[in-house]
View 1 (cartoon, helix red, strand yellow):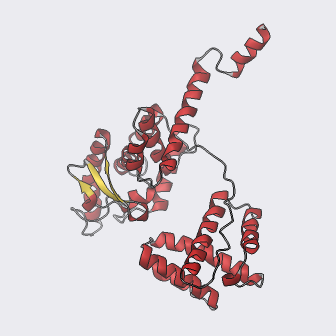
View 2 (spheres, one colour):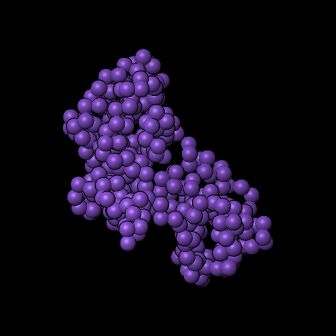
View 3 (cartoon, one colour):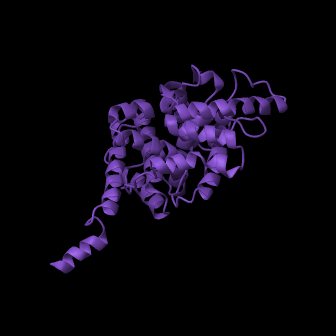
Length: 327
């Protein structure tokens, strides 16, 4: 259904949009990109094509200056640098495809660089904070406590992306709730493991899941169907997971911007803090690049700085000022 909606969006009058759709179809057929990725590329390129049309530019003949002007316009609209760079990446791929198949001789993006992005460290819950957050469903008594605790523990103990969580099915589970088979970004397969607490939370949740599905008159209560469902017995959605985590974040009192990805960040940070090799963490997270995983070593350094500032007599500003006065 989603692929059809993408096609409807892009198949509008105009040869340029037809070229974009041809490129997206190529990516889906040859590279096997997901519908969500195809939609993102399609939106980026449709916006670029519209920009070209409004400025009397043929995308097939655009030069580096014209592509750079489009990127500059995105930045001027205060679009996040990461989103601007994603658009540029989509355009780069589009022109590489054109060059490869003889639609043009040169790549106008060859000399263009990404815009600078702020190096923000991920929001992390430290060990005690994570333990308190995981107990919130039992303490708060809101929403669906058994499901919510299992959901939180599954994301944290296995380091799951939100998209991986919602796509988990009963058929993906391995052993006695020991772990699961995950299909991550780019169709990359990996196995993840659940902690003892995670397995216990899942064991408490599954009977309630089966009962909800039976009450709804559905047929996926056994070894089939999605692992996490809503109160109506239907598969839980990405916005649904975000909403659940937001409700508990409001009640946590931790004063942090907690979102689903915070649980994955916390998983990785705690492993690095415990001395786990960063390459093993890379495999557990399903990162294609080691550099993506290495940011958690920086999180570890920031955590040590905070401990130092609180614990060492000269660690904080007050202590430093006292040294200056004594001298």
